[in-house]
Length: 366
Length: 98
Ligand code: SF4
Ligand code: SF4
Image (cartoon, rainbow over all chains, first blue to last red):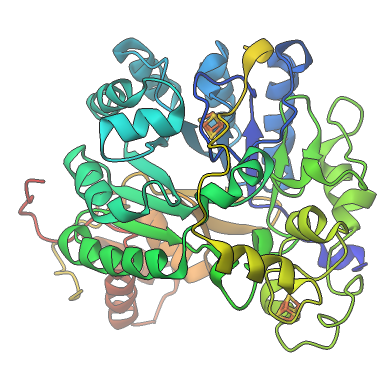
């Protein structure tokens, strides 16, 4: 554990306002068990969280979900976040947006909207999302821009759309996006179920990287292109969240405070709730936030590894999901004793569909 | 990017915003997906980039705070770097249509 002096202040808050969502994406990384509407924090509770976050040093908030537009109190929450001095980013599927709502979001002071899209081909996009959403996204992009809000877009990449990287960039540029995040799928939550069908082969990935290079040449001058690496194919793991409890925190729909959006799956940790503790205490003192701070908790091979300050032993959630222990080296690392679990999965891709995809269930949560 | 002319009026590039953070006692530059912790002089210069003040006025204002210093070179260089990083709107008064 690190001393209290080393803890610093969080920069970013991810506010998961709800798990309710009109889409059923096959790659959804939200947990298998979603929070129900009745369990969601109230407006007043969220207002208080935003206030506390501002005082704690948080500088930006990402409102996300599920679909944050499902919350009718989104506008007052945005206003409060701006009052607290935060940069406000809204992450949305665009489904449920209207021209009027886009204007209300702008008036409330949203700084940027990140619109997700599943593919550049409408039929495929709808297939991946498990519902007809493409046309509404295209429309949403228009309304966002008409309201004067900077349009950012994101697409999660996997075997179904990886061959469309250049087309995706072209489409987003033509929709007026100033930024496009191409994020290779992460296998948490629901996505882990579909992993064997989503995981690309090395060859497919290499071609996509070529397409990215072409896209940068064609659109890089007017649209920032961000590439989030597929960690399964790398030699070393990603530096999860830049270090556990170091820069950011997530508040889940029911008020639990997590060091990472995927952390709720770690059953061996107890996460505190904003209903019972204040954010500053949770950030500084809670056992869950201190569990993997610094490097004293590390096992070998991380403990004596020269990269431990670079990647912090990789992702704790992935260690838990794959190796069954959140305190292990991330199995993505080729030095991990559990690396075989990842290597075999990657060399096994692409596989024949063994029964096909399962779409995200939302059912009773909506 | 080349340095601005003294008559240019630098402006933070939308949607970037500055925030003075009392917890850390520093100016932060808020960008989408990024927060930059600024050193005091960078913070002081960017605070003056409001799209109204010319580069000449910015330099004059800063030199008033630090009498006897010649800040022109440093300010021009910093502005060029900041524009390169996408923190400021491009200099030219010609607006390119998207
Ligand atoms: S179903 Fe799709 S849009 Fe909804 S939470 Fe999951 S990934 Fe996000
Ligand atoms: S052994 Fe640990 S610290 Fe070293 S590269 Fe692998 S995960 Fe990172």
